[in-house]
Image (cartoon, rainbow, N blue to C red):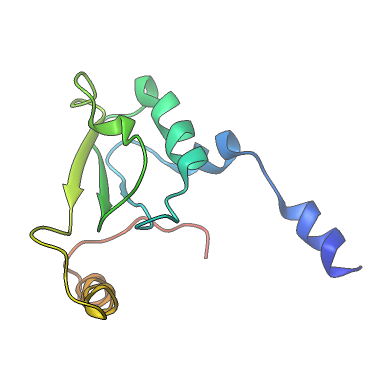
Amino acid sequence: MRWIDLYHSRQISADDAVKCIKSGDNVYIHPGCCTPEYLVDAMVKRKDELENVTVMHILTEGKAAYTQPGMEPHFRHRSLFTGKKRPTGGERRACRSIAYVFRRGGKALDNRHR
């Protein structure tokens, strides 16, 4: 099988991709301009099926509809980035620090698709 055929055979819709999220899960959203807007929108569309989903990120771009009034029973917003913008290279240190916290058990992520 050619790699492109394998790639296409593994593609799924955003709606199908977020079906694995369940109430009480911790979801990490990739920061910056790489925020997966289609996935976030699909997750927010499922709000009536979800309760107490903690959404964590460093610094995202986009609508962040999970923070709108009325979403409180469904999504908890937890920003891992506060304060002024760090100097050049600081973002890299911050990402390494966040990964270290997750590895040390600081906050578990629900990652079923490795």
